[in-house]
Image (cartoon, rainbow, N blue to C red; front, top):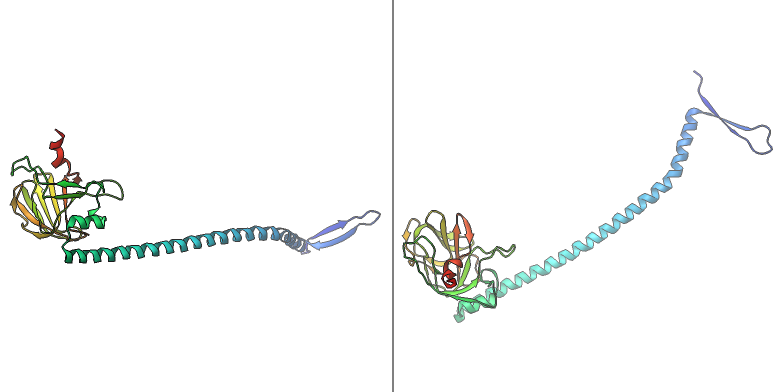
Length: 261
């Protein structure tokens, strides 16, 4: 079968007979595609080049930001380690010198002993108005200083109140109930949990010694533990919580409400 051809004619001024170029169709198409590629290739190269340059600039910026973050993280780690070593040293010095726990809590000013009002520590003392058989928490579980209050602020949540007091101080139940937990907790150290009625629980944490066992029935005002510095704690203090239906509530209203009358 005879091949197909395309004839190209070129006519110039003053030329009687036009020039002719007879090409097979496949060669014509090949040359046409090659011409288009030759024209488009530089434009595509320029676009690709600038895209690579932009991505390289972004990569350099990200590498620089990552390096800055790594340097910042390293500095934070050094500061945390220095703070931990300082706290440990101060704890050893305090133990040798017999410094008051409230003074130490002020020096630490961190963690479980951080005061919500910082410059306005509140003295707290045991003061009850309800009978020993009442299941409603009443008063404080010990005499000390309220070094940190209840908070629901994101990042600063605190599910109870902290009482700064010397290690070995007596801790008293604030309501009638049954001991449902008396043992070690990774956060609150030696801890006592009392179920008061159907929906109320009281929690006493960071103790040095427990004086009750699970299943014991206790009365408001009964001594249940000795305060300490166990668990995640930076100074001797008591962590006290009140839970209603499993949710922590502010214990303050259970021992200052009478001052609002």
